[in-house]
Amino acid sequence: MRMRILLYTFCLFALLSCDSSTPETENSEFPSLKEAAPFPIGVAIKSSHTSSSQRGELIGYVFDSITAEYEMKMDATYPSSNSFNWNGSDAIVNFANNKNSQVHGHALVWYQSMPSWVNSFTGTDAEFEAKVQDYIETAMQRYSGKTVSWDVINEAFEDGGTGNLRQYAFRERMGDDYIAKLFQMARAADPTALLFYNDYGMTYDSVKRQAMLDMVADFQSRGIPIDGIGLQMHLTTNTNNQQISDLITQVAATGLKVHLSEIDIRINEDGSLNSPTGARLEQQNQKLVSMVNVFRSIPLDQQFAITFWGLSDPDSWLINFWGNPEWGLLFDQNFRPKPVYCGFYAALGGTETCTAG
Ligand code: G3I
Image 1 (cartoon, rainbow, N blue to C red):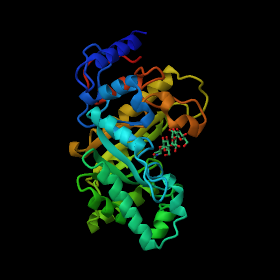
Image 2 (image 1 turned 135 degrees about the vertical axis):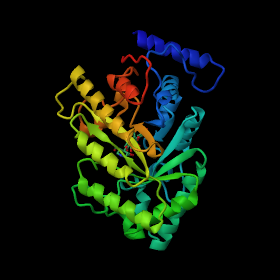
Image 3 (image 1 turned 30 degrees about the horizontal axis):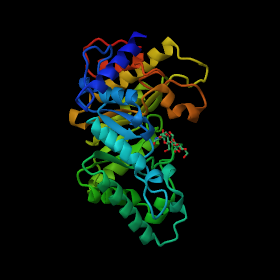
Image 4 (image 1 turned 120 degrees about the vertical axis):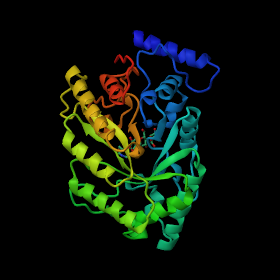
């Protein structure tokens, strides 16, 4: 109860304050992650979250990087071949800028977020490629100076240890070298933006990992512009720590920036829980701390950001996707920090008192 009152008091103070940015307060029982971290701390949000003052004050206090959970993807911004829809993305970018947070654009191309017109496009391959270039220019130039980075492409490699590129319209229309073309288009569209490749599952799928690293090495040898690699890190309490460490270390060896881009840590992988247990919450905490310690061991200029894929546990995609109750994020259903929050804070180098809710 005290935490909630404190947080409401904190929010009331924020609302009354003359400063439009989120004020720091000495009274919070949980310190700010962004104040402790030597790199941005991010959270994925939906535009519907931007109208909540409680969410807004909490996000502004804790984080300094924002990723759109789905509203900066092509199916959201380019729903028909002759019209764009920037409503959700504008709301999120404006919210982030009002909170003095950077914006990480996610994602220009993803096989799961293609608008339906892409597959039914009747023009030539050259016309398709020109339309893709126009889309990338339009999206990136709209937010140039407001987004610091973009996932140019998300999840281009197959699962299942094949190491193959996925087969879908962009590859079919633009050829096997389509990813390089997308990065070149993105660099030309907004030279100020850092360009990332983003993917998942490369802790346990070493073939996918190697295929991605081979692509990066090829890009670097050919002068194809790429600045960073996003490791989604949708983990469980059972994810192997050595595999996490090997992945981060090998990716850092490319010399590119590393973004832990979509973190959540499942504590109910076996589906046995109807509510979180202290033991599983502590395992979640230890899993994150172990990963953050590895991340902080890579060169500082490669530590791009650590981003959580949602604010509070009920927000998480995990619940619908896996069909189980799940508590994978930093805040509980009442926006109280969980043990993993305080463990994360300490792993970032924070020294203030942190009391989980
Ligand atoms: O909120 C709207 C609702 O108003 C509307 O009526 C309804 C029907 O159109 O859509 C609702 O939005 C949905 C949104 O999730 C709600 O959060 C979108 O349709 C749905 O596409 C969206 O799914 C997102 C998914 O990517 C596909 O874009 C998830 O939120 C998001 O967590 C998930 O994130 C992906 C990363 O981008 C890539 N890595 C994997 C990760 C999980 O799949």
